[in-house]
Image (cartoon, rainbow, N blue to C red):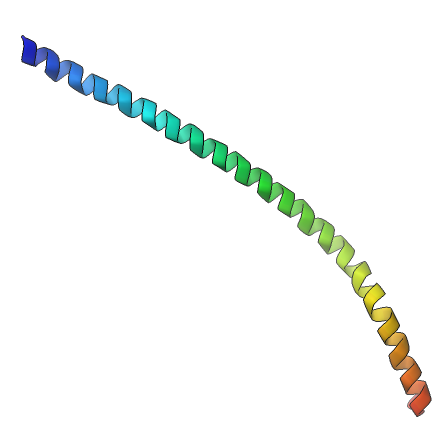
Amino acid sequence: MEPLIYAIVGPVVAVLVSLKSTQVITSKQDEKIAALEEKAKVLDERITELDRSAGTYLAQTMQPMAQAIKQCQVTLGIQ
């Protein structure tokens, strides 16, 4: 009778331990996924913000250069 009990209880205990370890691993992975999703959301917002401000920044940067080129053209008599 004793080997029969071990044959039944052993696999049941193994399944329970396996389920518990799977639950722990899954919960850790869920936490990591949530953290990564939050980082992705922050990065997406930052990229959107940079895209919006890139045009303005480019215009502000290019305006003095365009004026200097125009002045050079006028000085040289090109225009």
